[in-house]
Length: 295
Length: 306
Image (cartoon, each protein chain N blue to C red):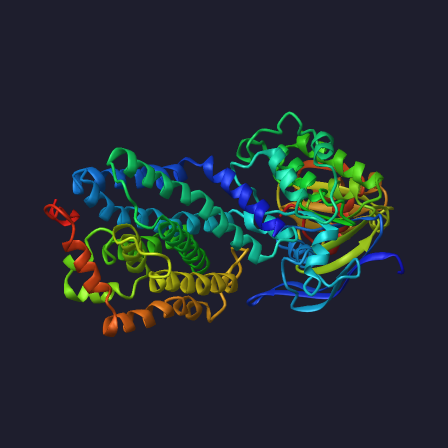
């Protein structure tokens, strides 16, 4: 535990000294925040609150991008093997990745809430505990996803290709950019297989409907279960050395990561209420319906 | 050997089809500085990284301080220190942060501030790793290798790529460690490094250990001979130089004729006469006293810096 804390402390310090990180974790989320708040939400408090779900979800999901790039760079440059010479178990290295990202990204989420409060006069965020718990569960699971991406790719180029593909799927088919009810029916059904959908939807239900963590069991539970599985798998796949070969069954392991959401997706497609709830939530927004889609 | 802290028996390491280490055996005593000398690709790094537990052996047996590097990995890491060849630290990590961080990973550690002072890094304590020169990075690597006060120290090519002045700095540090009776295993492809620093040297080539001994013993193999390095205007006919008076053997290395002879003067006279008769000319001639380089050339027919 001591080792995890030391590693996490070091990683937070060097990440804060990294300009690229500040751009991706602060400038970009803020750009989205103001785009959604002022342009799409026209500064109306209730609409801004509705759009805050997607904004926070994007800050949270971005975790995997920076983390996978960092781990791949560290492996390529032989930084990981220097750490490996010390008595540091793989679990501490990846545990510190998740912990450091929680501590780095959560402040961005809090900043977004504060700006919404003071710039757009959003007076209530529904159930704030649910928002924080969802954000942490999201950071943890998307950080683990980043660790898996880092392990199944060999070069930075490969990593970035996978990151782009994941990112576009996560933001376009989840309600993060286009509200789910406005997606084509087939995309709505596909969205039910993505963790991003549950994160966006959970955040919106927490803030708009004030749902407690217990009423958000499906959203929080699925993210936690997925995060735990992804963390476990990332520990199996972790590679310290650039030359270390991926175990032959590694891609299978990586595919196993999607299992929880395949199951949940199937269930939601048959019995779930996520789509109908999302539609109700969107329709109940006061005022006209400014959406990112009708720019 | 009762007091040997490190044993390697018939070590084999393969990378796919390539056999990098082919049955290497040696032992290192406590307080000894042991050098693996050989050209790049000889299998030195593979050997040392098996000992550090970074690579898994494909055959043979290895113990370090009585520990198996794979099965007792954690205990082993607590008692060894090492500098690696292909390695780095995060660019934005400060020097003092690095030393304090690594000190915190071990059960037993030395005072980080003392290490900073000893390795002349006090002035650079707030510098980022990315801003350090090659020599400063290597000094930091050595300080980090000592942070747990290890029983055995592994130095993989500690001066490769450094300029001569910085190299001498690193020699001074290693000689100081030697005076402290640290057990050190180092790899190098520099002859002078092996001669200067090592109590015993193993010459490694193509994954095999071809000779082991103190530098003096190894040089003793060619102690009574002088080395002549000769360049000729035209290539000499095969074996003609070997048969000259006073010449023990002759090799061609990179277009230079290397003649080992009992006494230099008669051999040179014979050589000059022979060249006149052959209508050949002497372009240059160098007389050298025997060094480990000769041992290497004798054993492998090649120069070390290939």
